Image 1 (cartoon, rainbow, N blue to C red):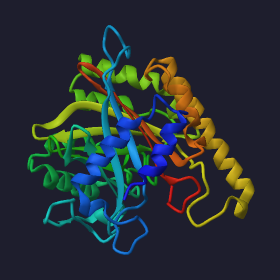
Image 2: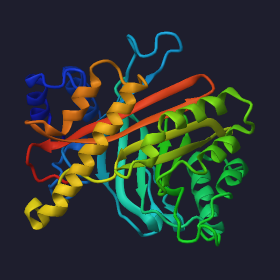
Image 3: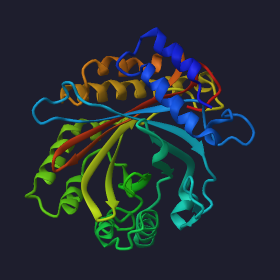
Image 4: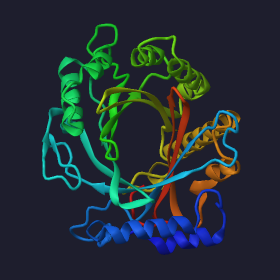
Amino acid sequence: MVDLESLERLISANDYPHLVSQVDVDNIRSIVNAHPSLFEKSWDERGSKRRDSGAVFIREYIQDPLNGLKDVDIKNLYGFFFTATAQVGQYQSYGDSYVHRNPILNYFLGNRVLVFDADNPTEVYEEHIDFETFPMFSASRKYICEFVSALTGNQDTSSLESILDKIDSLDPSTEDDFDFSLNYLVHKKYNNSVELHLYKSANDDTGVEDIIADVAGSKRTKFFNNSKSSVTCMGDNYTDDNTNVLIDITFGQEGLEKNFGQSMMPMKKRNAPTGTLSTDNMQQYNEYRNNHNSSMVSMSDNLDNYQWLPEGWKKELQTWEDCRWTENVFATFKVNAKHEGNTFRLAYGFVGKKNGNEPS
């Protein structure tokens, strides 16, 4: 079930005209109707796999070399959280009878996000899963490549191995440092590729340029220069103590793609963890909330300064989580650099009605 009633109240208030509209209600309803077995039960109903009763709005757009984001065409995608059995060394993709067995799946945290394209609601567009960070060394790198190979069907992962082999958590100079550890994985069902998101634990961009160069194959390419420029633009976010940054690389049917991504999000959640109250530890609650808000302002300011946000979005994003009608969350902002230029993805959503019991 998706709480469309609360979402319609939010839209009727017209507080966020750039971020949500009746089109979103119609699109979500078409997705729900196309997959009754996924959405027929409430999130808290026995046997339901839904994590909450909300949705994630994913806006994807491309920066035009001449016009920037003026009159930009925005692709609407919608994500829904589901739960899956965690940390048992296996995973079954939605709609697939095959059960993947792999040691890295012992670190799977149990959150599955199914993403749908509004233009084709009957098919899963992407499937996202999250991981607890784990050390990168010869065995774990090998198992990552084996899992990616199993998902994509591409048996030759040598190009991916060449990138991951340079990340070593057991090297004496980096021991116990999980910089560039696998944190998130996106299986792009529409073209059968896998996006590996590597968590940047150190508050700097050290090592990022080296990975770009390895993916590019040469520093004398437009892809390398575009990627390096996007890192420069995000420099303040790498060093911000309140912001998490992840980088991502993509492996598909033809091997490693010339595609370099960066995602950023607040390090701390705005609300008290599920099952707790702000009054349990008011000092920590205020500290985390202030850190979260500081990150949101910093990110949106930077994005606006580099004209990476469509007009009117910045102000609404900064107050999105203050909504009166629904329990709203900011997810992530993502930029992907390719030879042709930058593609952007902004994700934000709601988990249910205001002050509901859904986890946020």
